[in-house]
Amino acid sequence: MKIRRSLFVDQECNSLYAATAIAVSIFVFAYSSRFGQVSVLLYYGLWLPLIMVDHRRVLSTVQTFPIIYLFAALAVLSVFWSQAPGVTLRGGIQMLSHVICATFAASVVSNRSLSIGVLWGTTLVLLYSLFFGRYSYNPIDGSYTFVGLFSSKNQLGFFASLGLVFGFFNLFYVVTGNAQKLLCLGIILLSAYILAISSSATSIVSVFITLSFLFGLMSLSVFTPNTQKVIFFSSLVLAVCGFYLAVELNVFEFILALFGKDTTLTGRTYLWSEGFAAATEAPWFGWGYLAYWVQGFSEAERLWAEFYIESRTGFHFHNTYIEALVELGYVGAVLLIWLLISTLVMAFSKLMKGHFQPEAMLTCSLLVLLTIRSVSEVDILTPYTVGSFIFYFLATKSRVAQRRNAGSYLVKPRYAGPKVRALGG
Image 1 (tube, one colour):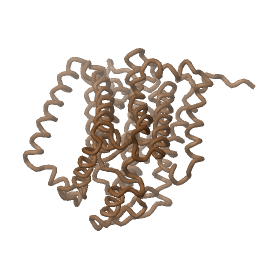
Image 2 (cartoon, rainbow, N blue to C red):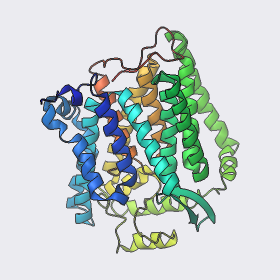
Image 3 (cartoon, rainbow, N blue to C red):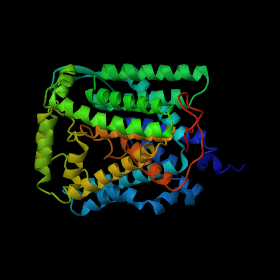
Image 4 (cartoon, one colour):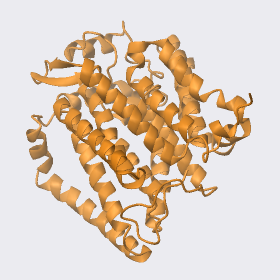
């Protein structure tokens, strides 16, 4: 029996494979440390064999947009100056292969399949943590919070945030029947409940801003393109002014107090200062990818002890840019920031031109979420994480969108006006 190639690589026919592969990948990202190498091999098995199915399609992004691989390539090359060459070589190869999988996925997965796959994968992750998870004591602030099967409440909160964003997006733009809508509402309630009991301030604040942004874009879709542009630019100006006023009126201190946090952000500002100090020792190319948090290194051991990290693993500077600066220096930090900003510019340019399609709204909302979290978390720097997968997926899609217009796969949005098209691949 011959299996049609289109069932795997054609976005009009591969929705079952694509959504399933995305859902399984999300689950692997959440629990690869628990299930070990077998789960990672499963993840590779979902995406890398696509090169044998249709090498022209999956390699087109490599040939057309090699800049996407610059940061991962630098991570591999840093083995030549790394303080821990073995750790760097392994981590760099993992990161590069992870980025390759994300770009392969972007070449065959439509945004509709992504939305469905992430929603189902996130639901499995949250249910698994809810049934088998635990509460954890934080010795720094003396609180007990639900962390599920993760080492940090912020990791669990991130998956709950994705459940909310993709839950609402699927509710308005993907599903059609009443039963499917009720199921989406159930997933939204589950995600909100997990987010509440995790008490992750970073996740709560970031998803609140992201959902406000998404709902704002959805409401703009009922206006004409010229009106959309005026309202969008006016909203951006108001947002900047509002941020300035919030700083002047110490609103952020009030928000921190609501979550039981102090102005040090539970020690994050101290970590940031330590990160800047570490970066001065190797300013241009850094210590090497993943070469700072290594057991036996005095500075890492000291910080693990100060923050009560008994496992002496899985810790970071709680800031994406400082972490990149320490590991890969100014060169690595600039590459990462440039990749993030260029992807943001390409995504937002569609909105600024008045193209409020669902795919543009989803991409911009996810990038807003990742950008906000980058201030206090490290979601896009490490392999086998949902943040880095989504980021490189979106970075690839944004660049492909400049070259070709994808087909339409979603139902007509509930709030869409006559000028708004359904989400493309």
